[in-house]
Image 1: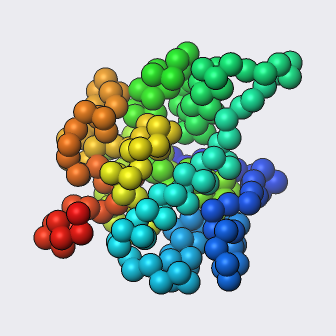
Image 2: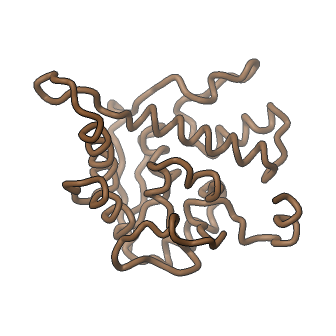
Length: 211
């Protein structure tokens, strides 16, 4: 079973983004992320699944998260926050966006983000870009199938895990959900972190040649 949640059109956020910095490319700020990136890649001559393609895809997604889920700088009384509090509040915002309980610490937030309901990392951005509903999955197998079978829902795990926020959203499709919500991306050498990752499980021989 899964459910959907979206944003009212009046709350769709428009930001200058990664796509705006390429000469000759005219961004469509309310287009779905995958559609927009494919159009950008074609305009720049990046072959699908090439190193340039994968690096730029993650860079664009990171920029989108910076825009749509910015780090809070002040509290409700307009008092500047400390660095730890800034980070915590950003993770709490992400928990709310995913329909999950807010943690009292960053570690607790990461634990909640790793657990049910499961949400695709690209869908979260599209909710902000387009206002369209996102699917929240209680069944990990259905979430995995949706992510692997739907074009544009995967990014490169090895690149994405370098960013703390993106890392907290990665799921290990080879091992399945972690009942403790532990950050497996840091603990595993597996390349099978699809779902919110690039489809590195496909064509292993060609992937090895690119490494």
